[in-house]
Structure formats: C-alpha cells, structure tokens
Image 1 (cartoon, rainbow, N blue to C red):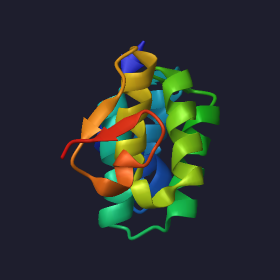
Image 2: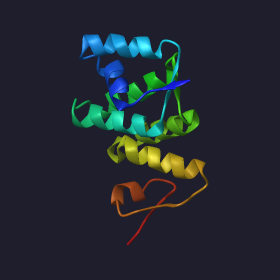
Image 3: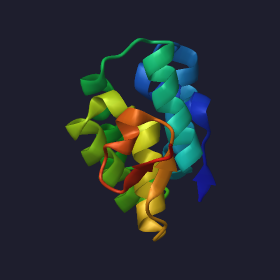
Image 4: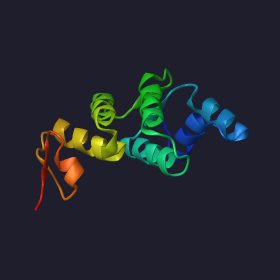
Length: 127
C-alpha cells in the first residue's frame, strides 16, 4: 500500500489548492497509509497555519479515521487520542496522541513537565 505525508493530508483536508487536491485524491484512490507522525504534523498545520478551532481539528481527525481510502497507523491509538482531545482540547492533539501511544505500548506513566498534560490520566508531572 502507498503511504502519504503531511502535505498530502493537508491538501485533502484544507482543499486550498485545486490542482494539488485533485492530485492527492488521485494518489489515494487505490488506498494509502497514514503514519502517525504525518497525522500529528497535519493537525499542527491545521491549528497553527489555518487557525482551526479544536472542534474542527477533532472533526478532521474523525474524517481521516472514517476515510474509505486511508488507513491510519494504529487506528485504535488515534481513536483514543481523539477521545482525550475532545475531552480536554487544551492539551492539544499531539500531546493526546503521545499519551495514547505510550499507554498502548504499556509505558505508563508518561512523564512531563507540562502541568496541564500531567493532570491527564496516565501522565505524571516531573518536578
């Protein structure tokens, strides 16, 4: 199966360049795999560059989870991260994803200096 990177995902979601959007859709038509790093970068771009609110970021992740042609790496981990993010959007999707990856791998608690993240289940503040 083919794989795609961040800029392809951004084109598929933002649809802000007609030529690249069509090319991206054509590339994924037979299916494509999405690495977790590309997903995290995509959500960061949508937040930082496109200034989407947390509800729109969550919807973007949901669209990717449900996409017929895309296979997300560690689908269950992404679903878990999305649940965390919806419950506490102030954490940011990347931190929710890191927490979900650590939990799924059996590595808990997740040590952090981030006071907000440290309040999440499965995380611990390093003093």
